[in-house]
Image (cartoon, rainbow, N blue to C red; front, side, top):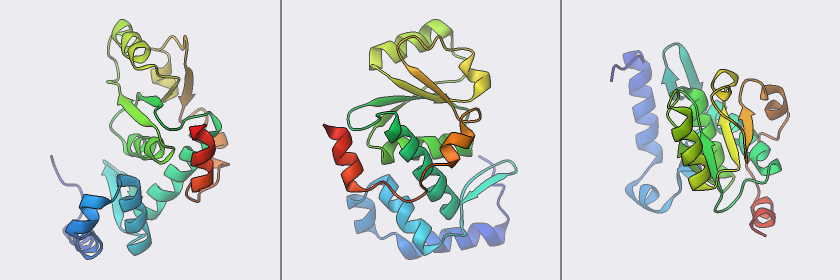
Length: 175
């Protein structure tokens, strides 16, 4: 995999990570909590990059919190599987992190897989929500699940709270 970061930025990012994460942190913390910790320690460090798109830890934390709140409004919570039907872009990372923050699990779906395979996987996993983009949504039947298009629903997602979900919100969704 080719590294597109300038050497100075790459060095800064690796140094920032080393200063924050200890072996004990890695063994006992969840991915969302490690990202939140890194966002506080090094908010301007690059967290995700793909081509010309980059996100800082602060941006990743904020946008994943907004999407997690949006998922919460759709009833995503513990023991619920969300279909993750996105290309490998920063949007996919935001969505995966948001699903975990909402308490759910994600089912990665390969873009442009045969429709029959996608529908079988979605039914078999009991998926009720699929996150995708408008172009890929055309490959889904949306029978039995809600399709969230990250581009089409961007304005509604952006209106969500950018603060982390509180424990009380998660508790309400468990019931």
